[in-house]
Amino acid sequence: MKISEELAWRGLIQQTTFKDLSYLDDNKVAFYHGFDASAPSQTVGNLAAMMVDLVFIRHGHKAVILAGGSTSLVGDPGGKDSERPMQTVETIAYNVEQAKKQIEKVYGDRPFTLVNNLDWTKNITALEFLRDIGKYFSVGDLIKRDYIATRLGEGGAGISYTEFSYSLLQGYDYLHLFDTYNCTLQIGGSDQWANCLSGVDLIRKKRETEVHVITLPLIINKATGKKFGKSEGGAIWLDETKTSVFDFYQFWLNTDDESSQDYVKIFTEIEKEEYDNLVAEFEKDKSMRLVQKYLAYHVTTLVHGKEKADEAKAQAESVFSGDFTNIPPERTFAVEDAYIVDGNVKLLDLVVDKKIIESKGKFRELLSSNGLSVDGETLTDVVIKKPEASEMIFQVGKKRFYKLTF
Image (cartoon, rainbow, N blue to C red; front, side, top):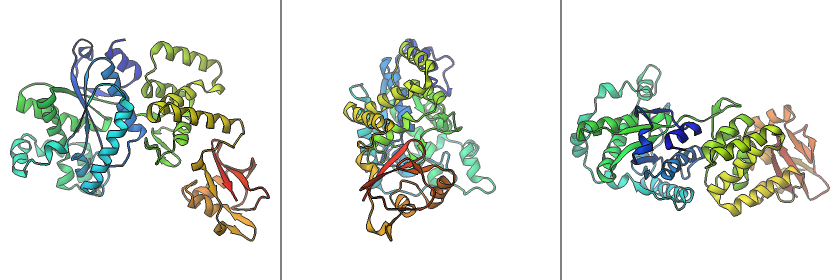
């Protein structure tokens, strides 16, 4: 399968400046893809972008992966209603190092070059930037961009010159990587189209040559219609200290039937023939959840390694069969004396404090909809009698289990 065919089959193209993607079938290019460093971990949304990079690398294209050490200090205004809090240089530097570790683990032995845009922006003076870069950008064009127009419009929060300049910095990145690595393609998220075009325009004006952009589609959970990548507990992170390996595995295992078939094509390197066979078997008996199991195991292996994927798989199978002895440590909580009131357990305070459920309001909502149970029995009150046994299984919905020990 040619790269243009694979990109189409996997559903990885939103917009592009290429008139015909078959150009990439016969011409090997150097491309770059930037990753934000505003958080100490990448998410499964970022993982989708990494998987696109791997498609290009498999087909012999040269990858330059950019960690946003300087752009993260400024903050991307795209998709934000107000300016995000500024972070320290030290915080961003730490986040960049964390991002590097995760990227290197996912890419494995695939060839790529890792760069940090702080390396070429930290020493440029304000006058140099204004004269060499700023003069090529029209303020009139910039304020027409959706995310800037929204912030400047009636009721908008406004935008600082710092965030307003973000697009110029991204354009400068493309110029630098064109000059240094001959990058002629930038890959970005669906919300980055305008920022990516900044580099295309800048290179055309300064170097009198054409370069290109591909943006990736926004991934939607078809069951909910919401942006992919979050669970009840928030974002799904690649760092196991923020999202445990067990929860990471369960996230993929719990995807709906329709969405999971798309996710397998995006988040694994499955080939079309194997995919067709997998889906055919899945259609025979969807209750077996073969697609979800394939997805969960292969994505967990990619991010956390085979050993941890095997462990998460065994834990998931154990819980499904009703054997809770292998519930992972992060799902085991000791009930402190403060939660015992006259021989009873005040579950409401306990599970919110332990962040099993995010708020008391959410707890009461689940309680009223019969979404909570203890040892298989539907929970009807926020306080229960302390069991004679030394432990009990607290269940949230159909798929989340916690062992409470006394």
